[in-house]
Each structure stands twice: as C-alpha cells, then as structure tokens.
Image (cartoon, rainbow, N blue to C red; front, side, top):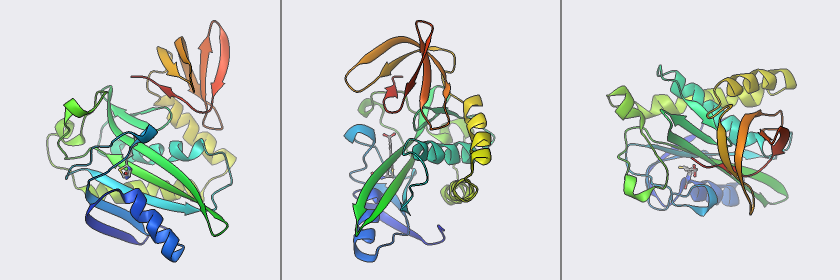
Length: 237
Ligand code: BTN
C-alpha cells in the first residue's frame, strides 16, 4: 500500500504536501522530508524538524472500520516496534507519543479531512533520530535515538521498518489481532499503575492512577477507586 515514497529536501510540513497531493490526484505517496520549516505537533504546537530526524506523512482513504482513537495508537505502535528493532526498550505514552528513558522520542499527528465525498486521514510521524534537539524550545523532556545508541542511525531503514509494521497492522486488523497488539501496548505503557495528571477538555484530573488502554484505544484510569474511560485528552509529563 505504501510502495510509493517521495523524498523531499525541505518543506513547510509533510502533512500539507500530502494534503495537496490528495486534492490534486486523489492520492498521496508517503511524503518524507529532510527538514520542515513549519512542522506541527499536537494541539497546534510547533514541532522542531531539523535535519537528521525522520519526518514523514502517509495517508489513508475511507478508513472507517474503527474509532478514530485507534489510529494514532496504531501509528505509535509501528514506531515502537521499529525502535525495539534497534535493541532499545521504548514505551508508549497515551495517546500517541513514544518515550525512551522517560523522554519523548517520537510523536504522531493524525489529521482528518473530507474531500470529494471521501474521508482521508493523514498520519504524521515525527521521530528524533540523529537531529539536534533544541531543548530551550520544548516544554517537555525530549531525546533522540543517536544519543542513546551512540552512533548515526540509518533513517531509511527505520522508515521502512515502520511502514512494514504499520501495513501489517492494517492488513491483519481483526479483533484477535488487535487484542494481541493491545496486550503488547499495555505491557509497554508508560506510567502504567502510576499517579498521573490528566488533561481533559477544560479540566485537569489530579491523582489519577493510570490503568491501561481499552479496546477502542481509550485511556482507562482509576480515580478514588472508580474506573474511568477517556477518549480524548492527554497525560502531562
Ligand atoms: C506531536 O507529538 O505533537 C506530534 C508531532 C508530529 C510531527 C510530524 S513530523 C511529520 C509530520 N509533519 C508535521 O508537520 N507534523 C508531523
């Protein structure tokens, strides 16, 4: 499905390039850029995208088989597996970050839009690989893979490994298969069983205990002995 890949040198955001392709051709190859000048992250934040990182977007058409909450999770799962292949032990921070040594190493941004009667999802992957991270610019702890492995990492190998897993997840999507993935994710869930601070729409929940991720990709937490489900929000670092 993702056999066409377009490598670009410098773009504003691979998300926009992919969207422009869809508007023109009803299709977008995987868009990879060495550098982004207007990389964007969750909640309209700025995403540092210096040379040396892996910045790419892929698109899915009419992907309506299941809830939106699952898609970012499937993306971060593919990143998790690719990083595990480097003999590291990353974890997933719900809903869509991958962390290593308690620091953010990758983030996912899924954007949805409709065009010509179809619904498109553009999944953006940002992975700190060999790029310098300007800590002064970010509000949370971040890390790149190179500083842990202590050598340059081949970005294309990492890209192919992510695409391969992601494709497999999409193709084999069935309840059983997803149960397996979910189990894996729950075993590698960052802050599991710990007290966390959760941001809901306009509310902050303190002293929640992070329990697990449910079958719709939702976060399950315990507050005052009661279980709660959260479909959109985030855990603060
Ligand atoms: C986040 O954690 O806030 C999500 C970061 C997503 C960054 C990627 S890099 C490739 C794609 N293009 C963008 O402008 N953003 C995503």
